[in-house]
Length: 242
Image (tube, rainbow, N blue to C red):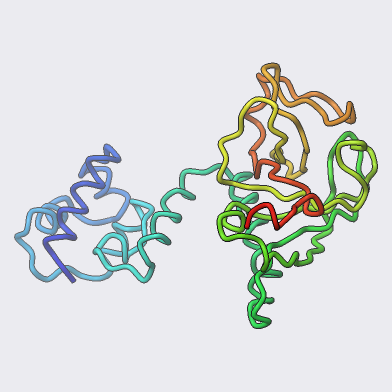
């Protein structure tokens, strides 16, 4: 263990978290004298049990506290970002992870490239989809690289309520690379995990084709945007990208 890194890291965490030595002492059941010895370098023999107690109080992993990580830098950054998210945002991310695991990863052995499409099979009212967890893979092998990189996931419609904009069984492709702008159509999820397809306007999130309720601007903070509509799969003319 790199004691110099550990001590500096511990001091930084206490300072950023505005945690006093007396608070850490009380919560970790370690005397203040022992903590001073650990933090300011007098002790060269620090017990693992003490480090574990300190990590628990600081709500961090042992590895991150002592400067040893089992994760790649990108994974570390993702973990840090997720710690700042709300519970329903975490659920949204879990949906996308499930999509990748159940479709894209499972189809790699075929030598083809796929994007994940979840199938909406439940009942729907007021633009809310009840997903039963069914998925399929859409083959995008022949799509240009720059186009494939923009596609995050797809969604297959089980309703004709959005006609003539979207039709029954259309596969709508979404991207996470766009910052939503006015008139963009987005897929968003509320705190209950229900999905809404809506158009962004200055007044809020408008229903598509008049189907469903409008979500006023002052309530938009209760919804997490999962993706921005990129295109309907059948509308892609691959030749135009060559």
